[in-house]
Length: 87
Image (cartoon, rainbow, N blue to C red; front, top):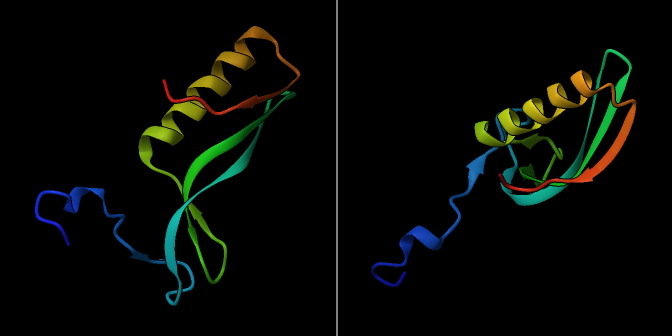
């Protein structure tokens, strides 16, 4: 490790579901449905287990997805597919 660059390395985390796999950064699609609204968010950042495929999102990502979903429900959106974008 180069001194001063340790913050650039991704820490590996043991999967809390299967207890065997290691998680690594990746992206995936997330589908949310509520009150007749279906939203598909593409390329959502997540940690993905290399054994069981379970995914984990940072709290900020989850919060943003839920906020966008609530806005879509209020606007009367029925179906929408969008690429995830960091706010």
